[in-house]
Length: 336
Image 1 (cartoon, helix red, strand yellow):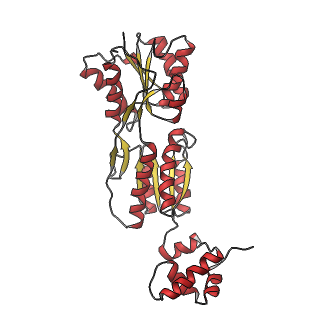
Image 2 (cartoon, one colour; image 1 turned 180 degrees about the vertical axis):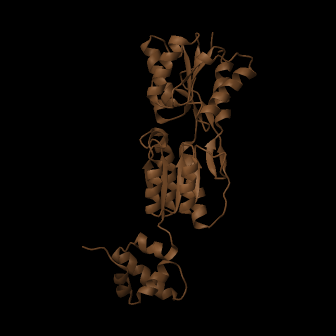
Image 3 (tube, one colour; image 1 turned 45 degrees about the vertical axis):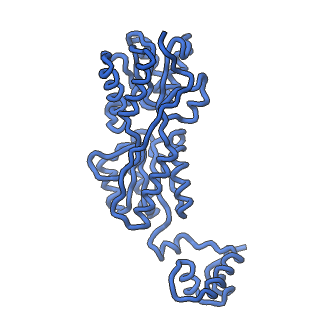
């Protein structure tokens, strides 16, 4: 059975197609009785207005594009859950694009989103290069950044203060009596999360009179495999340490696996704190003490800001720095 059309609704309600269209788009020029007849016909026939047809009226497709470097990660799925939650409430569909590591497919997917005529874009967890900005500018659609920001372009963003959160994590270990603290960081070339988290770690050491030792820091590229290799490097080359701050939960879990393989007990021999508070942080043993980023809330906020720009023709919405907090579990103990 073919789906009902607007002509079917008009015939059932005994009105013109134009009248049905006016009712569905909340325009004027009809009586309450006519509106009731049309809405009753819509309900009885199960009529679903075509998205393309709606777009001809409001010049929108009711779709937003979301670009992620790693769609399959728990980090991305938590943000996406928040984005979709608000989008569905507001009548928007979401097109998700996996841009891969280091944005290998970002330009390709921006072209896809242009062809799909999306109404706006949520750009996440990646540096907004000039070529990306130019491509979006040519699309003439609003964009919101999540878990990233642009120091060059005035684009609204939603993110945690990475420097402050990393400082909090490191200072927590210091308050627990640790002074020999290693770090698994992101790349220092990453000025969005990698460098600020490293600087937060260094600042906490300095404020507590602890020397920064470069060999106690290893780059784990914000993934499980990187955390594993970084931990092996630290155990082989760094001066001894009693605590470790890993700048992502995935890196922390990679480090925990290596530590336990080497016979180190956590937290008896080594205290570890992560960053993100992904679902895995609660599932590993022992459960990971970590910095909580409200990822789903960040996704919701980004979606709300973007749709406000789309629907209200706003020229500007404000950026948001969201609060983090420390979640104590079982991987950190006070140093005897």
